[in-house]
Length: 128
Image (cartoon, rainbow, N blue to C red; front, side, top):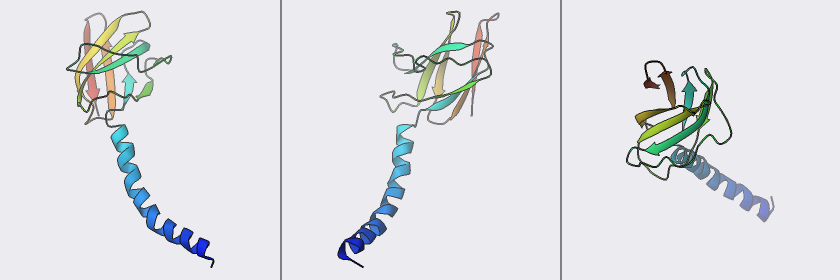
C-alpha cells in the first residue's frame, strides 16, 4: 500500500465516526421549531406567518407562493431568529380572512393541525 493510500485510509477511519456524530446535532439544531402544518379549516390557506409570542410584528409569509388546500399538509421551515419555544401562527385564507393560533409550543411538537369555524368565529389547533 502506498503512503498516500495509507494516509487516506487512516484519515477516513478517524474522521468518519466524528462526522456521523456531529451531523445529526447540526440538522436537529437548524429545525427545532420547524413543523408540519395540517389544514383542517375548510378553506385554502394562502399565507402563513409565524412569530414569537413576545413580538407584535409577523414578518414575512413563510409559505412564499405556495398554498395549502383543505385536507393538505405543508412542511413549514423558517428561521425565526429566536430560540423561543412559544410561537403564534397566523394564516390568511384565499378570501382574505385570517385566523391566529396563539402560544403554540413548537419546541415540543412536529405537527400542528388547524381548525376554523367561520360561522362561530372560533379557531383552535391540535399538536402532535
